Length: 266
Ligand code: NAD
Image (cartoon, rainbow, N blue to C red):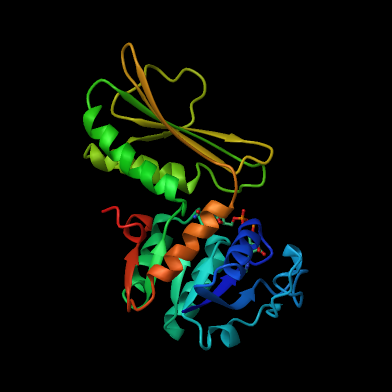
């Protein structure tokens, strides 16, 4: 049985993770953490769910790491990297769902994975994990004469754009075509842009309301379009995937994994 720490407990994903962890008989909620100025500190982690679980939300990371097996992080890049260093020193595995990391920060995560096991994925849902594979297959078949555009929509509170999932889908398409996303991505268009360069992969971002997360990968050719779409209707899908990832790490000493590994889709 994995002893799990949830960080960012007062956040939108934190709530979904606590609910999923409290109701999962195969995991033990070991600690629920948030930052020191969080108003929820000292409250029972189950309180918002209407069920006391006996674990109080705390900011005491060092105490929480004692006896823990894995820390599940859906916060922001800066705190994620601080949790990463603490986990590396304590020999505790990590599930990182936070998005918005720079390439250099991603390298820091990869380096830490030499010492501890990490599942790092911008989208932990089973559906999006499958979508990544479908996009790779489609890109190989539609490699000539089809323009690739990625359209994503999220709630008004999301702070990074395009979404980490959109970027991951772009990387999957680019890799299948032997392209480097950093060289071929076009992020939004305005004014006189000229004709579309067929080697590019375009991104369009929509922000509004309470959209949990929609992603479409469009392959637009002459006379037809293929659209691969995923729509998340609840954060539970990400939370359940993250806990599946936490169980996957049991017994692993180190290594960097993603949801393709967790779901054995490679
Ligand atoms: P949120 O704003 O609702 O919650 C963020 C949490 O992080 C809060 O609990 C906040 O207190 C905590 N936090 C912020 N700064 C901190 C700090 N300096 N130290 C410690 N804790 C800090 O955000 P959210 O909607 O829950 O999303 C969190 C992250 O998860 C985002 O990066 C989002 O893109 C990502 N996300 C990933 C997936 C996935 O499947 N991988 C799914 C949904 C969201």
